Amino acid sequence: MALIASLRLVLAPPHPAGRPFIAGGVVALVAGLVLTHWLAWLGLIFTLFCLYFFRDPERVPPGRPGLVLAPADGRVVAVSPATPPSELGLGPAPRWRVAIFLSVLDVHVNRIPVDGTVTRIAYRHGKFLNASLDKASVDNERNALAIRLADGREIAVVQIAGLIARRILCHVREGDAVQAGARFGIIRFGSRTDLYLPEGIKPLVAAGQLMIGGETVIADLAAPA
Picture (cartoon, rainbow, N blue to C red):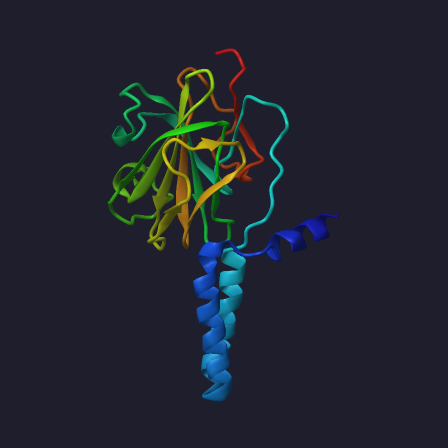
């Protein structure tokens, strides 16, 4: 069963954002078969890499309401109080932040952490530092979302570009009603995703843990403070 699950992950269909790259690799492969073998090998390797990098497996969110789910696959690199990005207008009070680093081997599709309504989306240009560094949350190029829960509390998700990642894609808009576990974007080629919990909510994860986007529970909104 574990082998089957691994194969399903590796062979998952690619995200639409990867199709131009995959098509480019196939063109190079075909051209190489006609012109020169080294180009064919390069095209094949690039195509296989893109098929793996842009894989978009299905995920099954937990059925219980009130859970905050991981917005991305990857490893937790920091769990600490921090102020949400100022452009979201969530105030200066620190709240718990869970930072997830995505290597080039992780699934890079981002997922909504909770049911709610997107109240604000703000893109900010910045640097392309190593996304595993703590200062990447402040200095790097990013796209930040604020999501309002049914009870009025707010949560923030921030897509952060990394050393190699230069393109952040977000498919939702302000005013959209969103569901936990649903896809909302992707970051190309290595990145980071930060999650800011509602005030008074503590995370259930620790630095070093591996996350599965749309499935791993990061916090319980119904838990006592």
